Length: 372
Image 1 (cartoon, rainbow, N blue to C red):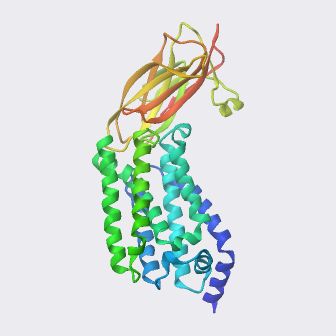
Image 2: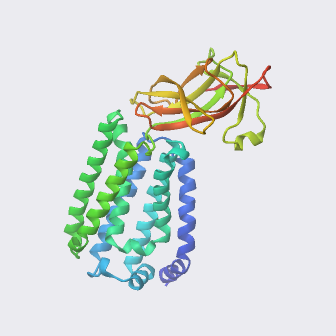
Image 3: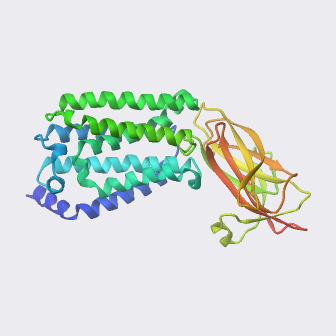
């Protein structure tokens, strides 16, 4: 009796509950997920993938044979009937897909400048939204497999470098090959347990997987894919940076009003004879030491960005707050918009420091910041 009432109540308010849990899950992940190389963070992701994969198998094991052949009306009815196990499996599937995608949104968002990597982040965001809006498509096998494969590939992109302590083109290719092997094995298992043969869906599934594989490679080799597992923990422009006796960095910055924090290119007043420093703290997983660079660029009169200098720097992995380093420039500085790209050795942008240089005769009010 109570169970039936609970089913009816959930069936009535399922849309609202689902939306709130989706948003709540994203906020929870943003506040609690710390590092891509932590054991329990990855157990969290693997657990979600296992539950999603199991639900897909069970959904199609219960399928009477209609599956992808159902029309829109029948699909909506199947997705909304709270009296059937099918309904609960689809809801569990949707919930854990949302958990995976929100985790990826958090991790990938931290690993690049949004103005650079927005196409890929948009794909993740759309997948996250589709998880809620296109619920009835979770009855469709091809849609489920597409979401699952995207989740597996996105996971492989950062877990393979974490395991092997290396990054680069070869590691990314290995990540892609691993994702194809895993989804291939999964489809064999699905075909074995499902009462409804999935041969009718093979063509659509193959096209979907191929499309996602090509898309991910296109994003990576066009440098639009965030350089995960690297991420920028802290960065800024300063008048001076020096290491103190405690091993921290003491940085002198221009004192700003609160409105400056909402400006894409805040003013930075400088003395033409004095250097300008850019600081960055880049996180890299434990055991993954790599090279990065500070690429100093100035916007010319035509609005194009011209590279003035590129300073190579080392990053040692494992420090929770990121490996701290900086570069400086004294010559070839002139008023106008500047940006310093913090990038890996293949040119993927980890983050950017933007500022508008303004020539001054005396320095404005300054404050000291301690970079621990």
